[in-house]
Length: 281
Image 1 (cartoon, rainbow, N blue to C red):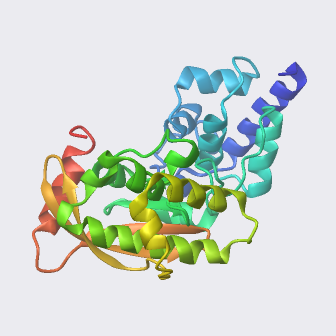
Image 2 (cartoon, rainbow, N blue to C red):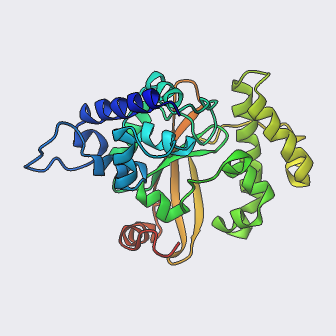
């Protein structure tokens, strides 16, 4: 990467860091802060990077950041879509298409997610690619970061990877499959007819999964808005929850949050989830 661009990248990161208040990203302000905005170690923590690595980026030194790291920094620093694209170009990386795991998270949804600290919540795309999770969602559903290509979509994994189905009791698999396919058809209908990402995903699933092909041929269509579902957890066992959805204006992203199902023990189980975290995952 050209040194001038790398220097600008560091200066841009520093300028964005200094404008954010800790409360904006769910961090305590503390009585004695010597710097405006966030500290470098706080940005590193939010982006899942080491402090030394982030320090190098701000100094305009070190290695070229990966596309995944740029996406994480954009979310940590609450960048606008234009700012995120600028960051990719400064790093000499291609700006990712919408709908991928590196998609720019809707700012309002990211703000809501940071405020949902007592219930599992995550932001996904309309193709069920997870963009951001809070710690409780990671504890309940597993850490879904680090997945790329078609496998980043949970729907794709549901029909191609038997391990994805371990999240739900076997008795619920048929209904989950039917619901996923109907939701996918509704989501794709809202996209452009020439959308390569959606078309490629459906084409692959038709080739790889006879179950998907049979359900797709039924032409059922229904957005997945509010569900009551049962989830398997390795430590806590079966947890029954309500899954609620908040859609972005264009329908391309959804904020999901999970609440205890009335008449079950799930409230106590979710309280325990906050204690054990991801250590059993």
